[in-house]
Image (cartoon, rainbow, N blue to C red):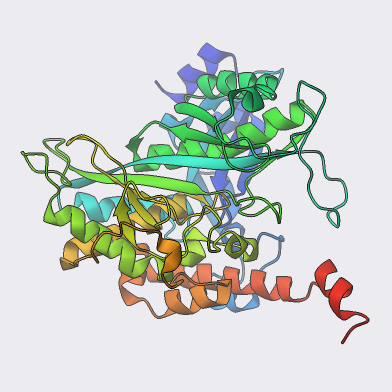
Length: 447
């Protein structure tokens, strides 16, 4: 169905044209339907390229202008007709559409996150392979926090009380926020966001939503839109939803676990299993690639200074890249499954990631392992917390590892990696200027 037919059928009067920037923040333009239809055909829908190098604080790294045109040339927004959806929380009929960015000759921007993922998927397609993914997103519900100097607090639920203890997999604890989740499921259904299971996680008012497995680009689109959907549903009910990796100091962090497998593009057979149901050499090489290259991909898996607060020993988050069967202490867990659904669960990424970039990085690591025939370590049967922490502990460590990783630069795109490094370094420098309450409490009068 064309844009014109879809808009007329749904009586849409306004269109939100969206892209995801490096941080995963939705940016773009809002315009009347008639003007959108004109812009979608004549190339007049445009954004400055500088949007793609904007930091999470809204600034621009000085060093990045050697990579991106300093006059901030325009890129054309090319709406993806398959991504148009209604925006269900508006009273007036409004649509949203995810756009790709191209230059004036129609070449896709190599620094746009959606295109980075498409590039990785293309590298699989060249070998006759197709990746399949299923994200799991954790998040917290909190009271409205008007002053960022104060810690976040759990919200009041239907019982008019806040949770005071952890309620992992608690049904009644989840039901406390039924009005929010009823809207979430209705709104996801209206947007073709294929969410599945909702569970209460370890933290106070911490939840997890699972997506059904499918095409990597489509699932990244859905995760991108889901974050926006959940925040809007929470705001409707007077609370916040946050995907910060570590929003509360005494509670576990939030992850985006990525279940991933690879199938033959023609037959659809899972390349991780043979005819007898045993795991294959490609499966082991995929894990080995994740083991070797995940530390260098941390600027995409743990993109913010807060991300590294989650990756601590005995914190329900991994500290290394060991793998194991049904082992939730490792970075790479292999769930018990049948032949067709054999997969590896990457547990490293935080919920604060840009889903396009985290999925791209995870698939890139596995792809390099498959192409190079890498061999993994032996599966770990005991707690990985008894082993050394090999994942970077801070953002600069991850930046240094990515800077030195030629294989990841080749798969993700060298120009994109240079932009990413510039943005992340600028964000870390901005963070370094902030004096925390901990410093004032313990250092002000004591040192």
